[in-house]
Image (tube, rainbow, N blue to C red; front, side, top):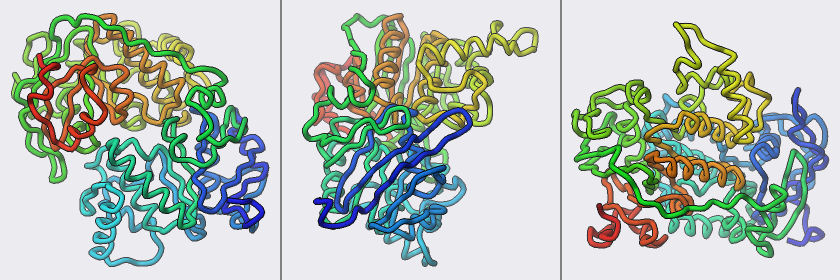
Length: 512
């Protein structure tokens, strides 16, 4: 990748983009060579997403120029980007819920396609990359991780010269991550350039040839990540070491949430049926649930949160009381907190302010009195969360949709944590969140645990589960493994269990 030998695949010169209250990109320079895997690293709100949208034609810069294979170009829209040979997988997906996987993919490909042929191509490409997809399935039935698979396969079907990937490994097992890396290296060896956005520093160091670091909308450094450590990359990104998460041993208390023989048929043709799910969550413990997205985690959360009420009364017990038939609001009033994996649309209402979004979980005499909303109290609560969790937002009146994905996640986590729930259900707590914010979120979860809360965390980040969990269980094809103590588990063991290959005797140390 000698710059003098051939023109850069992509070169940005002085790219600037300013919004009314923030400069998202401030004279950014970036060079990506043919066949290079180039990482973009930065905190949430550093300007990474805005820069990628400019490259993909979603957003136009206020100043600067873009060179594609040495020629000055203006990318007016995503269709023009795809025509040049640029493919992108967004962190927030651009899919139509009411269309099938194949129909969504067809919209991102040029020309007309016979649907049966396209479905075959989708299956072949998905199998090549180890990403299971059902082309005829409607998107509204997919989990977040499965939606990401659709975006990845759609981008790859366009045979891109430049592929932009935003947090692509969150849907994969550890074994499948290595398979994807092998495929990306093969693509790079054939001349495809890859822009790789990830908060997983070990991935960047293992995979990428160069790394551009951004902070506050500006480029603060370019390095070879293979010559760096996680600590040195963290210092480049956030200006210091991330806070240390301390997971101290503590004795768990009594069982608060108990699931007994939970079996549920499919709610729709593409759902995952649940088969004989049983586990306990105790006071003062974090129970981690591992598994590849789409193996029943979404259905389990819907049952636990009260969104799916097809359950027998005694399938779920809360303090020994059957609650399988109760509503989501009833459970919230009794102390159950819930952080869904979908931030916009379920975790927060996009067009409402952060203060107004407090009402999704904080309906009490402090915020609502005699039927009247106490707006000042809502603003005060929202402001406290913004300060405590260092959320980059323009105050409590900022619309939820105006926040970056990581900052909105910090706010939603903060909103639930400040309720001091007896049970907290969390899905993908740090997906797409920078290392500093991820450490803070994990520390807050452990602080809740130490205060006696029973916490259930569903995550596809195995490192995260090992860091904060006291016990682990794995979901595969709607079934659940026996529990195992986190200290007795290994990455290889959990990775194998995520394929459904577990032995009851292997988890004997963790059973209760």
